[in-house]
Length: 309
Image (cartoon, rainbow, N blue to C red; front, side, top):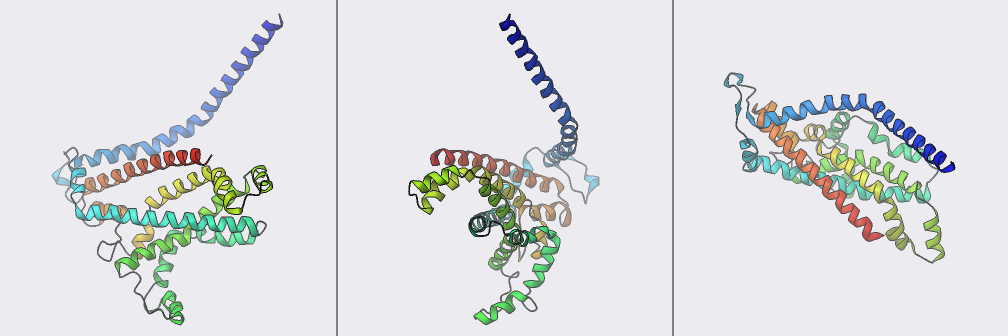
């Protein structure tokens, strides 16, 4: 009899959990449907454009199916390949600098300014500015004649630099502006992760006589690894969409030295050529590269965590 009661209770509990699970799905179903309706049509339309030959400046030519010719043409186009290289340099430079600088600042704040909320408010201030405003302000600050950056360099013996007119300096300037605005994001994410770590492993390692570097290498980094993965992936995906800062600062120049894939697709599809199918193909390649990069990073981070543990 008790066994029957227990089995009956388990069945009722199991049925109750099943009901809750169904209710949760029903609760999220409207949002999921809206998300699908918003995201999937543009995605499939981009695929449709990429396998057709469409020139928006010559609609009378019609739409011809050409398969993968647009993708093949991109890989033989020096300007397109250069835009992919520029995108890789920009994203690599921006995310790497922001991560290491953000981790350093987060460690300093967590160690010495844990209760200084004013400092955190000050640090996140650049994130609150719209990107268009940031681009316009920095464009004025980097001006070789009236810009304040050159004015500040003079006392240290630095000559006037035409920051946005030379290929190397232009790339450096874009990275510098992005680092200025988005390093606070890394600081916030990593600082939240540091302050949520359990204290017991740190206390035990101190009792065993472990040094600061040993604690950081074998305790802090492994425990912080999930936050690091999320922060880097967020910034990686966001950096791939960087259009406004680059367009306002350099418009892809001088020449095509800072032309990213987004800028290239904009020029090809809308501003210059009207080759919307060609631009759609370049955008899909970026999407594919993004998925591959995120997958590789997730696998690498999992392996890294297993090695650390």
